[in-house]
Structures are given as C-alpha cells and as structure tokens.
Length: 54
Image (cartoon, rainbow, N blue to C red; front, side, top):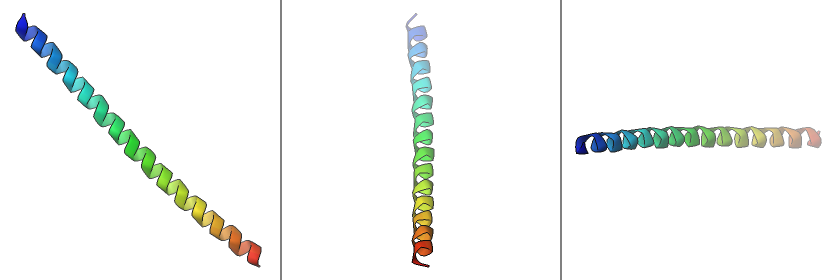
C-alpha cells in the first residue's frame, strides 16, 4: 500500500510541475506581448508627434 501512496504523491508532484511550467510559459508570453504593445504605442506616439509638427 505504501508504494501506491508514494506513486500517487509522485504523480501529483509531476502534474503540479507541469502546471507551474505552463504558467511560467504563459507569463513569458504575456510579458512578450506587453513589451510588443509598449513598443507599438511608442511608435504611434512618435508618428502622432511628427504629424502635429507639420
């Protein structure tokens, strides 16, 4: 019985590690999207300033 409990615990640990890794990847994607959007906002702001100067 003890080996079953140990196997179940190890299985839960593997699942939790997968969830954590998935969350980390999602966070990295979110941060990448955020950086990309900030760059686009900066470019649009620069274009707007250029247009108002003309």
